[in-house]
Length: 99
Image (cartoon, rainbow, N blue to C red; front, side, top):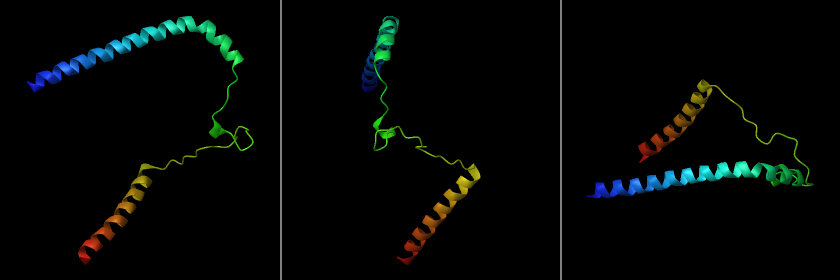
């Protein structure tokens, strides 16, 4: 009996989700057809303001890298992970043997 209840509830939720998806796609299509002429005029008037985190103390846009990523090989990553694992595992084993 519970399986039937779950099946009915899932079916109702699936139908609601698909109906919502279709409704949103239709409204998006209508907005893009109608909105093109309006959006062009408003974007020319509106000035783009950058996110506050991209500005320095004086309000100027930062001209420096905000995130620097260094890529390493899989072998180097594995060695670093093994070193961390070995260092944490050996201290835990020593603590257990002392008890």
